[in-house]
Image 1 (cartoon, rainbow, N blue to C red):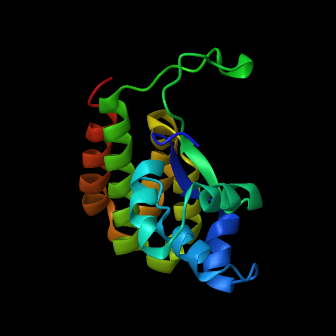
Image 2 (cartoon, rainbow, N blue to C red):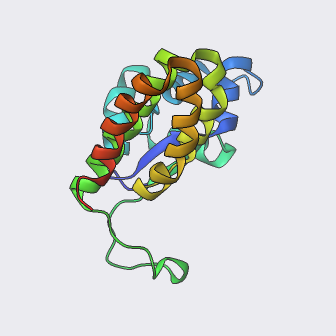
Length: 166
């Protein structure tokens, strides 16, 4: 595992935190909790030293399907199927993370439990284009809950953040 990669919980990983079906040892469960889709492997492993988890434990979570790579580390050798992939700038990554966090906060604050499926869709977003495609459905759900004027303010702020570098 590259220290610059970023991992996020899969749907199976989220389910494991709620249902405990895999009976993970405490170190692996603690490590799974630490994976947030924002921290790099190096940052997670730094924190994981407290529970005596290492890169092998992280690899175990990936192998079992509880976490998946969200952002790959920059690489000079691209795989055959990745030849069309465009490297992300630091600005784009930061805007993606900030926009995703704003959407997540809005879902939690305004939609609550009704926003569970939206949250699942949001976690599958991999880039700014995915967030831009997600925004109309999010806006529609927000309008139903808090009205057009309030939803417009929230969505406009997110749109500006997504489109800032475009």
